[in-house]
Structure formats: structure tokens, C-alpha cells
Length: 394
Ligand code: SF4
Ligand code: SF4
Image (cartoon, rainbow, N blue to C red; front, side):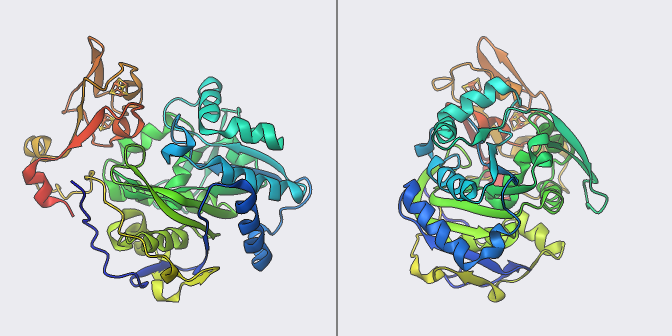
């Protein structure tokens, strides 16, 4: 049943906001590359600082959200019309553009190829001449100022670029409630290395502290959010596409996320990437936000439906043998399952095995990261909540 647990108080900005305070917000009703190019050009003309330093010969990496092999209309991945529009603008400045992501699962050229094809990026590359990234090497980057992560293995596509522009998608998320600009950078970590973070940081707050570190380490020049069609409900892959009709631009991912949440009436203070940003001094007062382009109140969007939660539950003082039964858990629907084994491959602690073609879970090993649900191509995995556990969810 549809439910809105975020209970966002009103459409006016209130609460928290990133320190940089500037977000461009633009009406964009359809995925038409020419029209999007016009919107972006106008935005960049008004804010030339956003593309500062991108001149002839500059190597720009467009870090998309290509979570998995999904068609553009599924609203799981960054739409190709936005990518095409941006590529043309950057090429107009003489930049060498590379498109890519480290999707969920193994980071291999063959997998990238099939994801690029299905997500519409092969076509963008053909039309524009932009490169698709097939370099699956990684680079160790030290980040001594990190709170929970003092170093990251990053995709070499990220480290070799002169400038990074991230293109997140506005969606809900089973683990972190919302995924946008801050969480999008998890895709700068190569393939299965992402599983290490799920394993080491089973507490969602620690995981989000790592995301804050990662954002401060990678520091893209710009974030452009695809919120033309977002996703509500059980995102980031099993939810429902929802028209929003917006593009958001900011050099600050925290500011951008808070503005995007305000647009779709998600309470930013209930989202752990924001609360960790607040605790780290990355987020200040939302009243100070400067929204350019359009007035936030020129949208009237019904609140996004929240995902049926997630691991964002307090269990610290409860014995393990009890939490094993009351925490939400993945449940596998045999009729939908195609026995592809992706959930088994992507399970960080190896809690899943295929038995007679169907996944079987060892709940003692399961860390409730929900990567299996996120990456199942058939939506054959649901998250079942125990009635007692539900009462404890925040
Ligand atoms: S549950 Fe989904 S990911 Fe797992 S084997 Fe079945 S179809 Fe594949
Ligand atoms: S079974 Fe699913 S939720 Fe549990 S650890 Fe594996 S991937 Fe994560």
C-alpha cells in the first residue's frame, strides 16, 4: 500500500542545507536532447563558474548513475537525452568527453558494454563521438582527512580525468531512503570493491559517513541531476517512475540533494547522507539556500512514496538472536526468479547460494545491505518487515 512516512511539513524550505547554498533548478518536461541542451546552455550562461576550466583538450569524465542494465524509460539510470545534451555543450568547448560508471556487480568490459547498450549510452557515443569508458583498472587515492575512510580505490576513469561531472538520478533507496548526488559517487568505486564497504560498514550511519568522505575526496566539478522522471517507492531499481519535470545543478552535492528532497517532499533530516553531512559540518541552514532558475514553489509535487524500509532501524541494544528475526529481510519470489545468480554474485558476505536454481539465504550471514534486491533484474526480491521491527523503524 502507498504510504508516506516522511511527513515532510510543507513545500517551503526549512531545516538543513549545504554550506555552498547555490542550486540551479529548472523546469524540464521531457527527455528531448535539443530542449535539454537549451536549458543547460541558459543555466551555464547565467553561471559560467559551473564550467570554469573546461576548455580545449580538457578530459571530462561524466560519471552517470548506471546502476544496472535497464532501459531509459525504467527511470533507474541517467537518461541518455541529458547525457547527449551535456556532451554536445562540452564538446563545443573543445573538451574530450568520456562517459561511464561502475555499476553494481563485477566491473568488466563485457558487462559495461551490455549496460551501455541497454541504457542508451552506446547510441549517445555513436551520435556524438564521445568515448565510453572500458578501462576497468583502479587507482588507490589516499585521503587522510577522511573520517571513516582514509583511502579509496577509485576507478581510473575518475582519477585520470581533469574534471568530473556527475549526473545522478532522483530516486528513493531501500537502504539510505533517498539516492541522489551524494550517494551517486559510490559508483566511483570499482565493482565488487563496493561490497567491502557494505561488509565493513553494516551500520547505515557509518556507511553514509564513508559517502561523505568519498564526496569530499572525489569532489566533482559539478553535479547535474536527472529529475525529469524520478523514482519513488522501492528504489533504486524496483520502485515506480514518477514525473517530476526538473533538472538540478550545483557544484555542491549536499545542497543539490537537499533541494531535490524539498522538491519531492522528502524530509532531508530523515535521510542519513544529510544527517551525517550535518554532523560533519557540511550542511548548514536551508533558509540560506539560493535557488536559481525557477522558484521551488512553481512545482506542486505530491510527496514521493517512501520505500518500505531498509536497515535504518535502531537495534543496538537488542540481542543478536532476536534481531535476526525482527530485522527486515530479503524474500525471494520463485515465480519471478530467472535463476540468473546475480544476487548470489553481488551478496557481500556470501549469504546466498543457488539451490536447484533458486537463491537460498543464510540469515546468520545476511547484513541487510539489500544489494540483492537493488540488483535483481527481475524484481524477484522483496524486503519483508517484521511487525515488531516496523515499530522500531525511524
Ligand atoms: S532472485 Fe533475481 S537476481 Fe537472484 S537469481 Fe533470481 S532473478 Fe537472479
Ligand atoms: S542476502 Fe541480500 S541483504 Fe543479505 S547480505 Fe546478501 S545482498 Fe545483502
